[in-house]
Length: 222
Image (cartoon, rainbow, N blue to C red; front, side, top):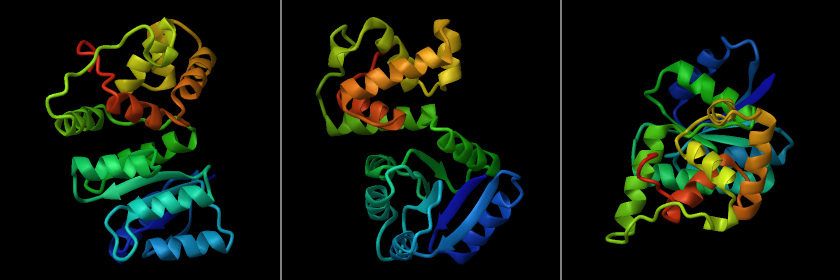
């Protein structure tokens, strides 16, 4: 059973999310709060969700700040950002705060449920369109700085690790990466663990963000 906590300052939104998630046999909504402060208070009282659906734009403490503080208290919790405002800067800041995934409130209920399951299975997928938009956003911030190609010695990654990283940046799951490279999912996970260690990150999302930030943008793959 996946324990989910809702954090949104609109009551109707929380009610709607609860109604959707209550239809899932393996998802239990263990609480909902209307602010980041209230969420952290509940965590302080001992509640331990597996996944938190976090509204980015909340009154008082923002979802971004609440995510940072929540991850300090519960590093293992999976945070999925929710917002009605589809802005590149907001997406980037939420992911950098520690969110593992991001869902627009106008998305279909099935996308939200899939995001929850993917996060819980430690295999969150950052949609390809979000990756492309982050690429454009970061490119703007870098202004005229040219985008670099992958090189053999990037972060000390081996050729096979670079192959895995390229597919990861395209939004492929471990299963899809294994199929494309004709290796086992266990081998993919081993490669990912090595990649995370070399890049100094702790998740797929952080690895992608670090690669985008550092200009790892092979033109033939994005």
